[in-house]
Amino acid sequence: MASFMMAMTINHNFKKDHPDVTHQVDQSLEIFKQFEIEIKGLYATLGRYDYLIMFDTLDQSDAFKAASIINGMGMLRTETWPLITYEDFSELVG
Image 1 (cartoon, rainbow, N blue to C red):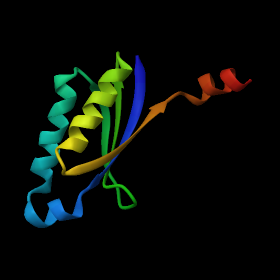
Image 2 (image 1 turned 90 degrees about the vertical axis):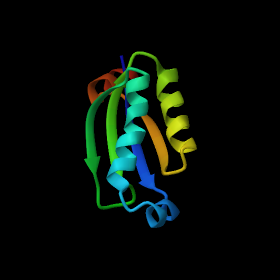
Image 3 (image 1 turned 120 degrees about the vertical axis):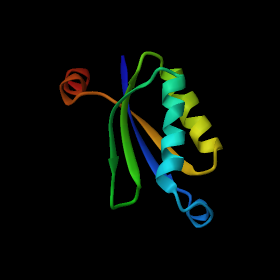
Image 4 (image 1 turned 135 degrees about the vertical axis):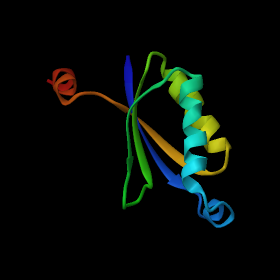
């Protein structure tokens, strides 16, 4: 299973036109269910990004597909990063 972190920023133009941002974010998260992606955590932030999602998937391509669909919806801009534990990373660079 592969782990990922997705950082999401709400498109400012979208906020002006759609005051119920929470509902819209929830709709975007339904994309993860379509690909059977397991969300491990969803966090709101007060920084550069509005939300961070940690998730696991069996197929890396599903992470790319989900991010592409969410970006295509126009409400959120995403950045998606693969995650590896520090211990595994240490062994790789060892």
